[in-house]
Length: 324
Image 1 (cartoon, helix red, strand yellow):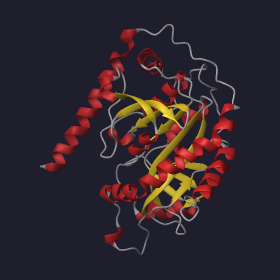
Image 2 (cartoon, rainbow, N blue to C red; image 1 turned 45 degrees about the vertical axis):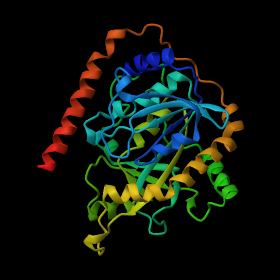
Image 3 (tube, rainbow, N blue to C red; image 1 turned 45 degrees about the horizontal axis):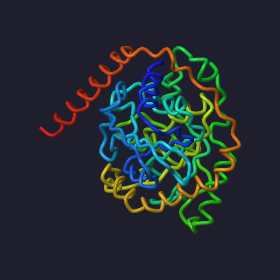
Image 4 (cartoon, rainbow, N blue to C red; image 1 turned 60 degrees about the horizontal axis):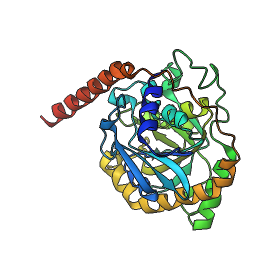
């Protein structure tokens, strides 16, 4: 779990920014980077040791710049375990952000709707999560614990900052968005890539799930572990199929991207407003202790880079096989 240091050292040497806010863009939400000015962009392929994003709607770029007067970094495309990446590697960008000085990360995702009271196009402020893979021992904290990042046994009861969740709804009120922004909800994490069976969907709803998706939790766990505050927004892009629903209501990735496109501009406005409203709170958070990058070895990325390429090749093979 040390590769994040090498990636951070590379970016520190190349970027002119010292970001305090990080943004992670979900499927189709890469346009969030348009809220930034004076940008400096790195393609994932240009960053030694960085994974490749292989999913449609994920641009594969790391963008530095100014967001409402605050130095920020935006991840235009995340990584998923169904792409062949470990949970540890899915969380790598967050640990890189920690090394760069980020104190707050805004995590976004496109999710299926479990709560019948929420509609397609609603934005749910996530205040808790339920992670199916974690129950089987698959999470980004398994293995050696880097004590410089955080404790061996971090509590997760306060992973989503209550004050910041309140700021999200205040921002929605100021923008007149309360008709589609929900103040709280629980995100259910599944590994994918298949969408949920009706039995799975019924179970997730029964345990209090409001939204379900294939990402986010590794990033949130890593952020909380290393002391970064979290805001999480789930855009409901489809209704999860339940017993009694027709087959025509089954989810598709095209449907997800279409729903995202319709709400994209308003989500950009919401994120900008949240950054403005939370600035004084974030400024009051003490800077986290710096991570020592002085002993980084330039050759230590080779193994991870080889794994990333192998995962990309494997994913490409699956795509080609489906086209035949």
